[in-house]
Length: 400
Image (tube, rainbow, N blue to C red; front, side, top):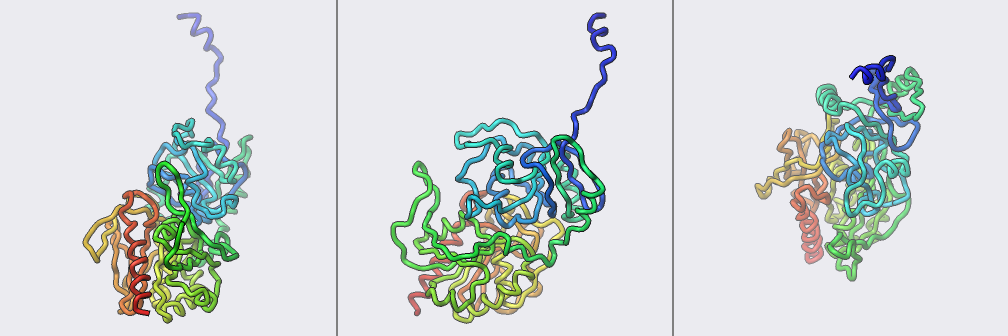
């Protein structure tokens, strides 16, 4: 016993060295351990309550300009693969710029894993930090709103905290930012990949019976797959495509995609296009930012939310059927129901906070939802919306 005490004499305990910081705009500095890419990135900090799907979340273009705090502690333990990326351009680094974790990443344990999560983050240039009390950070966001911050990773642990604080404080608010040009396509392309099915994986269209033009504000791959699975030929066009060019493609329907930023800012060029399409009575379906764009096009307003909705288990009630569906959400802005015009009926509401989650027009073949029906928390609770869109196009085609 005495020899053991002798061995410990003179020993000085040293805490692990911090290699990453999350510096909030108000000056709060949170220390942790770096992972993923090195360097620094700035963005708005939000929290996501999903327990799975971290790869889809981090590659969702709607998260552009944001740093994601995962409330679930074990992120990365199933590794990564190429199938779960949501950005259309596999090579592009589109989506969140940073990630905040509670626990360190463990080794991958999943038959689909192709790469360790840390290596995947490095390859995509996403900066991460672990070792933070994500519950406390989440509580802070719920109380005070989503703050701007800088996330920094330096293996040597050397940081200019004052400079990082100034950078965080100088970051503009998400309110008023049009981020769509950073993530949307700049040229037209076709899409024919269909949904994943065991054991063959993703399929390819064999035949089409209608034509959907999808306006890309930051579209996700699985949205395109589900549209294609309805039997529609899909043409994706850039967000600034004139209405005349879209109508020249003779679409049976138009899809308004998800995307990042302030919908009012994007609406400056998107809303006039949508209004022309509505006047032409082209069947229209919108998701997330596309939902907000449809609301703005008919005269409603949008508002910034304090903490937003980011997660995979959000209950939403479909007022047209009375059913409740478990949905995936990712938005920091919402349509203000009090500003909806008489020809826009509220169809869906959040059972968390009662906010608007869907509308349908009474004088035009158009509807939209705030959540992501292509995601799978239910797992297929919301896929009926794509069938509803197909039925709307078929009915309109029969009349014409």
